[in-house]
Image 1 (tube, rainbow, N blue to C red):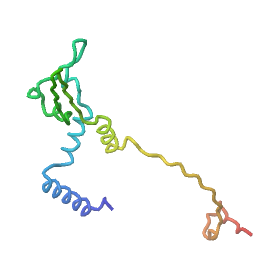
Image 2 (image 1 turned 180 degrees about the vertical axis):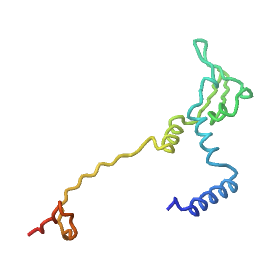
Image 3 (image 1 turned 60 degrees about the vertical axis):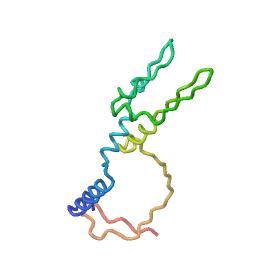
Image 4 (image 1 turned 90 degrees about the horizontal axis):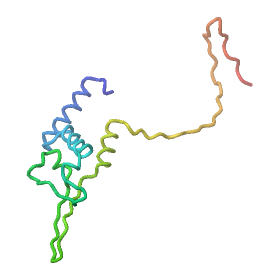
Amino acid sequence: MCGEGWVAEAIAAAVAARSARTGFSADQVLTELARIAFGDRRRLFAWGPGGVALLDSATLDAADAALVTEVSQTTTEAGGTVKVKTADKLGALKLLGEHLGLFVERVEVRLKTTLEVVEEIVDAPPDRPAAPRPG
């Protein structure tokens, strides 16, 4: 059915209308998922034997900033903590993989059936006679 030109045109028009209405496209969604899936968290933090340091958020480009979902800081008399949450890398990879058809769910079906011939072939070729009727 999608091979029909008018169907493909109607689908394309509906997708374009949705993109105009929402202000974003499927390509933008996929780009953002790719940023999360393939982003390198090492561009957000520096860590080693001396501890952990956050990099200045002003230096992050859009791809790196897409990785950050939450930043909070707690300060007490004894010191404090900084907490940074990043987007779900595995979830983004899963969504992209599903979009690309990489993860196909397989279902095994076993059937036991009996085949009964209910109609004989009338115009069988001469080298292949018609199948005999059962019974």
